[in-house]
Length: 548
Image 1: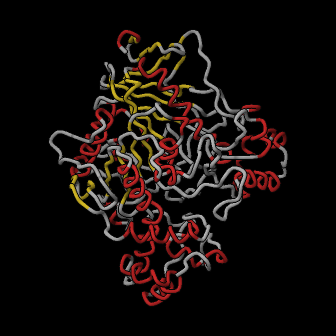
Image 2: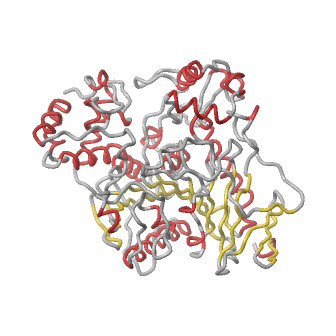
Image 3: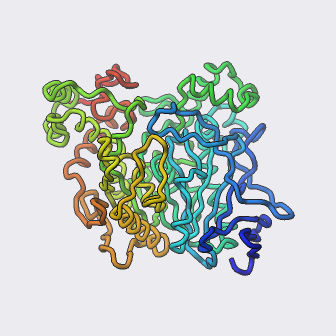
């Protein structure tokens, strides 16, 4: 990096294969940053719903001091827990950001994929500032990728015009193009293109799984960290499977409902109008099994050992769904333990005793949340860990159980995304959080835990093993009931067999769904969502979900 960079006071220049970028040196002098770097051509006009095209090179000096606009996305209500609307958004959104140690040479690279249900989020969110991780000797890259109907829309006309005969999965293709950009350019920033760690949380964790399973991303990353990954069954591109319509049928239905039935009409819609149409029609973005980006369902790829066999860290938080109130994912809790137990017996029949042992009736609301946490996030983490370890790849499992005071006061526990500030060092006196979150973690034990998490993560990025000096040894996981690291009460604690009985129960529930030819899990069939009351669940399907 030193040979290709010239410092000009607070400005920093880097000469990349694409051209000269002008970034900034941090006030402490330890890190430099380059923001809003285009890694692909704007996906607008005729390039809407096409695979990303590499960004062209340029001449002269290009400023890289401000984040690029976020992908197009709807605005959450101001009082929503996860409301965090970007300051600017555009269909022209394919940019990335780089933080690097000031004098980096051959440093390991971490590429961050933001969460947000494939609908919301931005790599430029202040919560993902990479400076603190960069101080520990890694180069951090955060990216934007197409979201919602812009990123995950399939249609027969799109498939026909595609050289590969497919459509959809554009957000995943954006992520792959960003990894290609890293491969070609990151050495100019002091990063090692042969030591790239892919890291993401929530929909970013899902994206990590997508990229591990996709043959198109092979060789572009060398370790992976999947935080709170969830993985619903995907529709197939052209066929109805698992009780779901095809991705192309979903796209045609969207076009008809939006009043733009042809591809020409859909491409002619202004971006804001398309965004509003997606919200009005309830379009749900998701990957599609297309035989190219995704040859099979992701869980099936992992079960067969067909994923990238790179070292993996995977885990979830102990109270994933406590912050989901008002999002429409969860049913109303039964009004009494007796009502809860009766519902469980009716829905789960011969599995009811095991279900009630795992999720006791004494506190119905708590049990409801625990069942959804496990059906969505817990089982996904343990399934990934077990299958990946069985493939022979080094696999490390964790459970983030640390609860800081302001979250405890609001009854949120270790809620979904609460671990992200600890990964990025956004804790302590200067910590910031979205406006509707609890006040940030600021105690000494919060800082100590964040230091431990960052030490494990950066050691893993460097060597493929989370071996951090002065911290407890983290033993690789050999099975879903094997070793894991608990992050709890301000410290890292080696443990074994997270939530005994949970994985086995959830696997049996899923096996019965699959045998019945149904989607093995979606938000509509988790826990008591099967009752189809006060939820987006389908009551008619619920009657046949669980069979003795």
